[in-house]
Length: 177
Length: 209
Image (cartoon, helix red, strand yellow):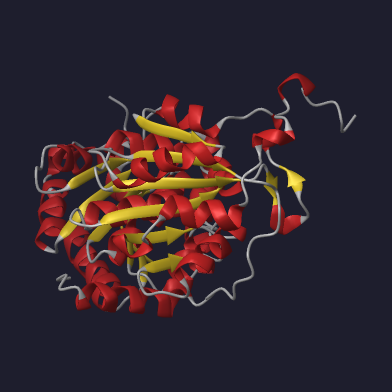
């Protein structure tokens, strides 16, 4: 087995994370499929009380969660770091409208990455988000996932900020090649 | 070689005959029946001329491509309200995948009206792809939206109006209009105050957040 391998999703925090988002009344889960978010996506698909929304590109999700807020609902955008690059201009809507915005980003092009294609956007993810006034909270240890996401939920939905929780490759592992 | 486009499929100008200042109000009808998200550009003026600067309208001044999925998020959040997205051909072309996403979710309370003048009016009236053969109704239909129509003649207007208001799934109406200036309207560019006002309008209707 490869030394750097994706940790088993049965680690537990993914399920806890879904329950946490639900307890905070998140009812719209928008995503472009990603292995790092598999449990959240699957849980949302099997939850009759939420909408699980597959996107063709991540920027759709930025506009979607703004629309959810307009109607008084809470959405979250699940994406990979490469998808952050697809969102940039759409974040004008979040900034201009001061919409609450929470995204969970599974990182690539980060700690232990072996695919050279992933580095450009992976390394640019945080600077690019911060350039659009999205606050980045990096998570490197399993025990920090839930407290960091609680912080992000509070900052987004009470503090009316745009927040990205970056699930780093130290946390989720590097995909083996 | 700029003129070397596929001339066989260039849509004849006589396909774009309706006056936008008449056709848009006619196809929307009583605008208070909807929560409205309207995309940027001349389309925002088309809607503004109908609604005024109203609390149940969220008018975008940028974030090109946002209107359709913003309307989707709103429609999913407020299933008891009918949501109308109004967008232009240029904006819709930028985010065609949104039609696929909307088709997959198929909310019964979401209608899309695309005002298609075949041009990018704000940037100097360059032809858009819809003047050059692209048919957005076919794309919507191909994406899986089951209820679609093209309104290109006055006789089509009633069917367009009906489709925007009735049915049990997402609807798409392509309204083809003459490439003329939109009606004069002073747009509200404050994205933040529009959001607050929209929330207050929903609260006034008894909607709990």
